[in-house]
Figure 1 (cartoon, helix red, strand yellow):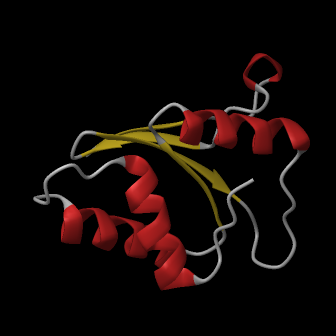
Figure 2 (cartoon, rainbow, N blue to C red):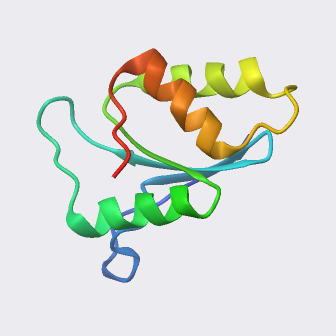
Length: 101
C-alpha cells in the first residue's frame, strides 16, 4: 500500500487527510474525531468527487473503519468486475455507517 498524509495547508483545503492506493483502488480518507468531528461542505464534495470518479472516499473516525474497508477490498479483490462503487456498497453493509451523498 502506498499512502500520503497531508498536513493542513490553505492550498489543500478539502483534500482528504490520507490518500492511498491499495490493490489498484484510489482511497481518500478524511479523519475526524469520534463523535466530535464534522466534515466541511468542501470535504464532502471532494469525497463525492472521488467516489463519482471511480475511487473510494470515506470519512473515518476510528481505526476499525479503515480495517473494515481493507477487509472488504481483500474479500472481493479477485472477483470479476469489482469496482469501487461495489466496494462502497459492501463497506456500507458491513458498517451501517457510510452514506452516499
